[in-house]
Image (cartoon, rainbow, N blue to C red; front, top):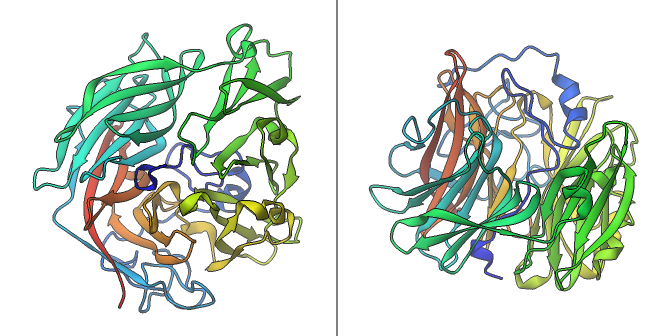
Length: 480
């Protein structure tokens, strides 16, 4: 597998963001949102203390970034990090902010959500494919950004109102192609685009249906599809939900390396088995993280897909009332295992922590320990009011990159980790909005020198709301 081209196929498990006016949450996001959902949000002055683009660090507990957090010397708006030591990288802006999708591409009445995938080129050319859903117009949008003074490459879209529907679950690149993965109408599917070596994504995408359970196509529909990172072939979990509202159960199937489907669970639709969120396949072993109730996360693993229905609790702390979950699960280099990025918040004392670390495939059983084996605290959470969740991170052979929007939608923030989960830049504010709400953000390497940071904006001061997707090139370096 080309790790430089890989991208995690499904969104984060734990989301701690309120979009104004909409509330967008994932399987176990609600408990963390409840902590501050009723707290009035005050948008900071965009020129104020949200973390400088050149990187500054809060010290100690610091208060995560712009909302009341003290900012001292180190990395972008967050305090602490690995027992109080400052992260070890800096990122500076390279050139001006530019528009990737504007009025010319976002025609009709668009409605962008929190799915934003960045896919570096599989053949290590200096280009990144930006992929997102437009739920308002029932389409998927793709634009290639190239490392050039004129950064905009080709543009493509698939779907239309009243036409074919593709629900995006992830994206990856292979030599000569960009593959979008998800559900095409009633089937699990891949949508393939030819990639031009100079300008990027081709105009027309070709859909390829993948094996789909009959429960999803006859008398039911696809609830969720999660594809495995670390696998050259499409391995996935798919849930089927009955169309009859009086039937409260659903089923979960897993595909295996031969392409066949195995039913791994039939449960109530509220059961964690119906909420697969993160999936990797490394060194012949499957690992899945599931969302549960307001304080629970679960995992399953095994050498064969039929073992994935045997869920075990994944607890970050022994406190049963703590709100917790996993942001991301990234394959380690050399097919060794995974790096986890997670967080918990104890509402009884008003504090929490971010955690990260790597775990080898042979040690997946230690995820049942409290705390799980391999991960350790990297950052204190003094308040949830300013957390920016990490959406769909990307990676290359040495680093993990991600982004997120602050809870109030005022800032777009950058994350940069080593492949083992040690923070180099943590929550650095790259952009502060003068008014429009920032919905989500992400980052990826762009060639050998640059990092591309992308965010989406919604201006709901007009009707219908106006959406824009912007980009900023960064130069990110490890401190000497």
